[in-house]
Image (tube, rainbow, N blue to C red; front, side):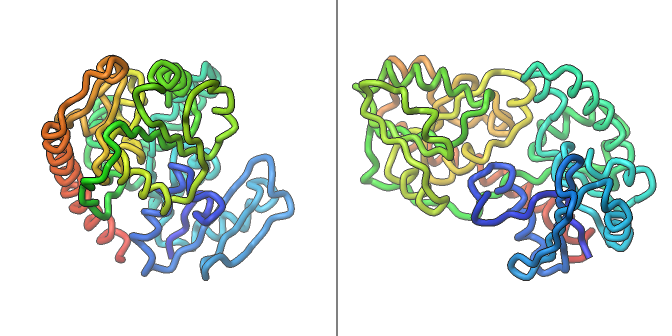
Length: 341
């Protein structure tokens, strides 16, 4: 039995990047008996135990249902925790259980500092250190993240497996792509640099055909006098927009949060043949493998590669993604062996 500490991925939350990661890991271990444990420190006072797609999902308050949580965890072969945020919810058990695998997702203390949450950042810095000490295995989404943590905590070197965001298929580039078609797919969080993207749209709406795919379409209601398509669509529909356009917007600042990240949208852009448009190219392992992109200023000034160069960039990026996925697949096999899947 594997107990997974996170929300259960379903149709209601499938657009969230973190949930897509959770769903991908779940798909890896679908042959194994597993259950989901959603723990709250402030809610779920009455508790809930339901079946979703044949999976036991528990939604419990940590204090009210401490002994049930203890029973569920101690009866598990392995406990798989998604993110340091969820580590907080079972934190005392890290000291007494030796079968906890922590999937880091990101660098939580640094993310909190980005939002000026200094006190929370200090708390999670301490939690992170303890999690590093007491986890049986640690999962990083990029080699860059693994290197960052092994330099910060040298004792973790033999604990890490690097499992990137999965790319399950490669789309064949379409000859009918809109030459000036631009897609942004994602949320409106601070690290997405959405305000800068809105400025870019206003400056270039006469040059490009913009499509924004987001779970928060009302955020973009103030883009005045711009011919922009703003939609909230299912993941299946998103791919169709990717395959019909040429460029994918992914604006990130040059900071540690982005340097170690593996954004789901960047993987999706590359595997469907979109050319990334970047503010800083230093995004996870794609930069390590020297991926091809169009820089923000060139895009704004319509200094674009010609069609042959675009095709070459696509092919090069497909190969970069393949190299990343080859290493990921090796570590997936190691994880499956550990979990006896």
